[in-house]
Image 1 (cartoon, one colour):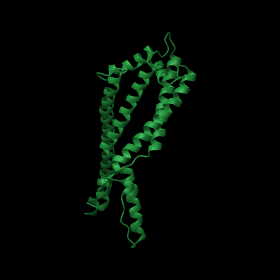
Image 2 (tube, rainbow over the protein chains, first blue to last red):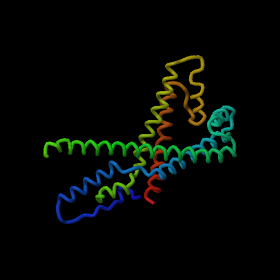
Image 3 (cartoon, rainbow over the protein chains, first blue to last red):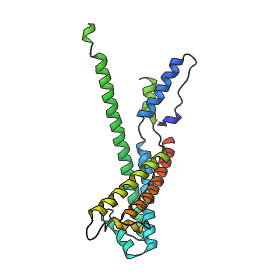
Image 4 (spheres, rainbow over the protein chains, first blue to last red):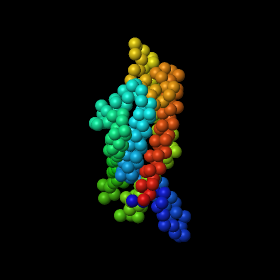
Length: 137
Length: 96
């Protein structure tokens, strides 16, 4: 897969119309190009694991009972997690998993929604195009 | 298949990290602002006992109107950082 911005559209010297078509296709690519699911999943994983590690470290450094209570609430959702050095690493793993699933899932849903939308637009356009088909027979 | 369609099949979109950060920042900040003020207006004997735990991470944050403004700025910064990092990592992997 190649990013939209890096796609080199072949240009010809033939006609202005052709260049206009190219511009239109570039705009269309920007509008309808899908998200890279794996990339968004990995980005989500990096952010979530980093966030959890920072949160746990901050709570560990503060060390007050209230801080431990605040952190231990996360253990209700993330199995094995606690405000400790071990918890930092468990939080890292949980962050990787949860972040990847969320990022990948979001990209998947977004791409599916765009695909559905495109299919709808295309089918409507085709119906409009052929609606007076019988009149021409 | 037309060349445009082939390009559409191979292309992926890139993210504007700064823009994503600003959007996430406003979203996070506004969420905390609204949640805090909702609890303040709701009132009761222990106003926002759980939300108040955020004060452990964000010094100065309390479940009060002033706290909601402080919390907005804290979460705006957090959202901004998340958006910028997310965009940078995503773009790096998508370009590869």
